[in-house]
Length: 195
Length: 226
Image 1 (cartoon, each protein chain N blue to C red):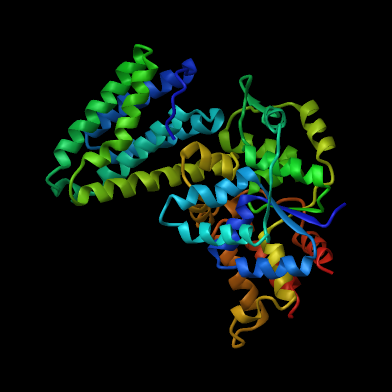
Image 2 (cartoon, rainbow over the protein chains, first blue to last red):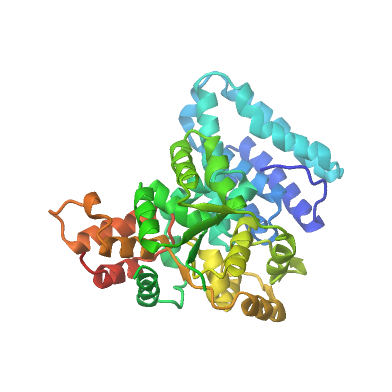
């Protein structure tokens, strides 16, 4: 999902810096709802520009929203260490962007996603699950915004199978405009193929 | 026009996750033609999920269909120009929106090169590009709340180039399979036709096929009992 490109649109960069800054404060204020709002905000940019950095940051914010929403996680012995590490990484990402050090930003993003490997016990399992779910959830938003299924799966580094299963359970098929071609016409065409 | 159906990844996934690949195998015999996918789509269907535990079984089953020649893999060269061309139809602030993937473009080129007679696609974006590109434009503006530039000259050329592509979904394929009696073993006789079609269509819908509730109701009326 995160890959080295070392170039970022100025508008995207300014937005990500703001998101990281507000995300940092939201964690300090224990504001899980704000983290979700920041994620939604970023996915909008990701849809219009298919920008991998925005996609990564949207997934990070959504994962953090999910993690900070579960009060029970705080009882795990490694939780505080995990939070400190996350705050450090968000700060590092922001500083890297401000100083235009894209390689360093990219490394911090990678480090976030590999953070799970360094967490011990049950928390490791939960964090992994949350990050995987965040990728699929954000993917469904990209698809809803008009990016094709395969392109979305590719951008997020998830399998199209997982994405389809998630999309199927949303109301996207009902909400969006019906196609001109009616069922009657399509069915009649398909019958014609098998005579 | 040749007796060939081109499949997108989405349609094969809907069938695989519903345990309907054997029905596809039977449909292929009945069709007396070729079912083809592109190399990029094969990777998406087999290689990517093979590395995960969750969909490894489905990947294995699709791989078997390929081994048995039910799904034929075709390689395409030079899809890059077409990909850039198509992804240049919509742009935001002068920046092209990369909406389609190389696999989908490869499928389009295969359809054209082999003079296929149908393109099986369950996902919405590719279908909108082919059937109603103006609606695609409206959808983007509606969803993103931004003015999206629409290169009409490019869109016209795209339509001219890929005109007459007949699109169908896994749900139409399975509706015909039902009418042909290929799904008879899957359903209990205790339930009537409408319940059986409802179960079939919702199964496909809940695993990603873009079919609306209204369309499912239409299927219940239109599909004939085998």
